[in-house]
Length: 166
Image (cartoon, rainbow, N blue to C red; front, side, top):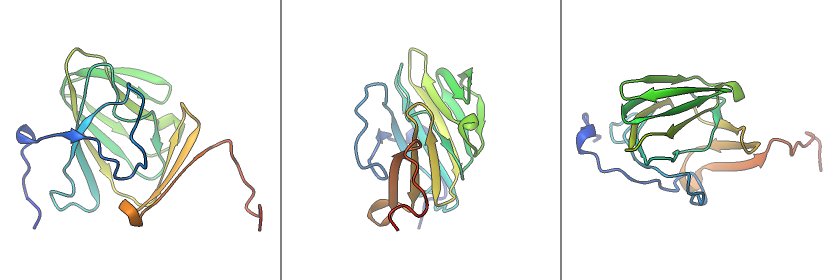
């Protein structure tokens, strides 16, 4: 039976697992520890995690979701939100909405402070999902999790005709 309550103050955050990514990030700018809470709480339609990002780092590449909305609550620290073409200062207590959409809703939280940037990330759990990565021109397709899931990353510029090789 899932736990009905999780104390954020007593969480032990772990380095990011490669549960849906085949390789570990190699760039030094990517760095975060986190704890997945949705599954612990028995949630199946809402994702929830706590993330801790060290100074100068981000947890994920700049990206947008075509299917899922995300909501972030800054618990500690300060940083900068990239949202579409805009940049916004964020600090403890700020609530951030990132709706599903294209490049105009792409988002990323950068720790610009001297200490950890800790935030709660909440998302809808619509599966499958398509994510776009404007900085690198990539597109990711995700369905399910783990070994039974489907994962495909490509470049948006690598367009194929529907009838190609048929």
